[in-house]
Image (tube, rainbow, N blue to C red; front, side, top):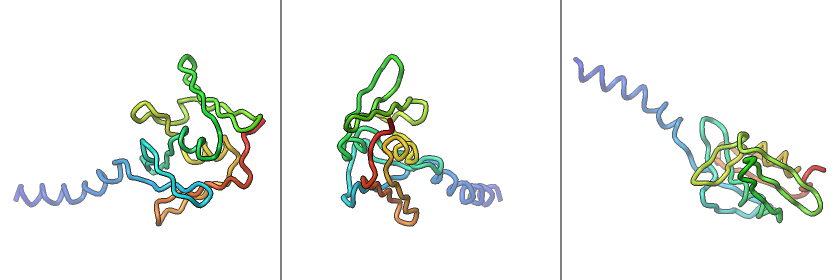
Length: 129
């Protein structure tokens, strides 16, 4: 009887455990799939993409200020600052929520849930002034 209860409990909890685990996400910039290390992930229902690799794929430069825990994104003559608290750190890399990247670079950003894919378009990209 105890074994049956344990099996039922495990069966009920297993989906919750998988929902909490990081899940990989594909990232496309201007139609081209971009791989990064660390990869983009979904954590707790939120999509996080690596700031540096996403910004560089769009032609932007990123400078990290250790003292203020702030990244400065430069695209052309425009700059945007993003604080570490807006994202998560994975292996010493700042991953930001998809929406934050889009807002910081003024890009068109689309989430394709069924494909677990992010599409970032540079049509209107430029850092806010």
